[in-house]
Length: 331
Image 1 (spheres, helix red, strand yellow):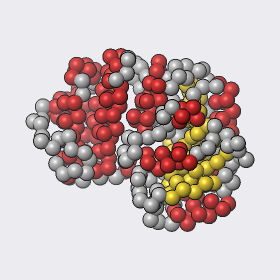
Image 2 (image 1 turned 90 degrees about the vertical axis):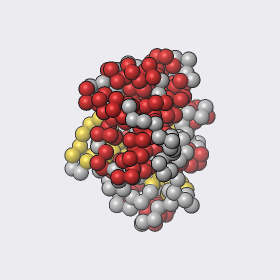
Image 3 (image 1 turned 180 degrees about the vertical axis):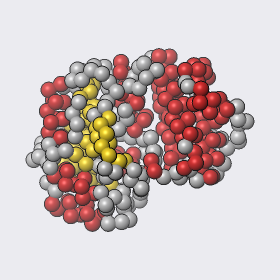
């Protein structure tokens, strides 16, 4: 019986994949499996993964014939996974030895649907510990109760799928799959759905995931049109949360977060290609018009002057006939 399945997508990470795979070996157990998903890499990654399929205990290699992006690759891995528990790792990150065994032991003791963990962010040689924004550690709670308040960061804002572990019953309920085709912010609708619909979770202070920032091929470093998928992702958060019985309580948080992300991208708009920057403004203005306007007004009133002013100016833009066009469609 497979106790734990680890889903690890890879795309053109030949420089970092050996570190990732070595750390998986240092976490291997007879009842663990590692689902290695090659998302149609075009560098040396496929050869590295073929070798890992032979040499890494528990390795299962799955290949995409076309590149589908991180969300789709994770879904492929989930569909192949057999474990009672599931988790994720990205193909350019790595783990401390024995991290998964410790996390699994804690989760089995707690008996909850999922756990969230702290992580170490690695930018060059700099290491920074990032904590789950949830004060109570090792205490089983309702994830719905941890969404609020809207005025500060909560665990629903800590969207990293690899910073935790999940019981298979969540996958059986359809709560672990991602929205196919989302190229960025794919974890935002995912974490909101988990917090709205799962029954129990706990935050743990277990450090063991090392998250590599500043990778040149990462979408967080590329200012192309794929970055605009965050609009699709947050539109989904708003749409699904609006159907929740507690929508009036939860939507202010969703709207405020959406506004903060839009403002963040507008504040660093110079990193986008000129055509993408124009599309960002048009699509963001349309997104503001789609939001529940009472909650939007409250969100803008609660933000600092600079961010609120940036969004209010955008809100006053005249509507464009193609404002709601999907990313990648000419506007």
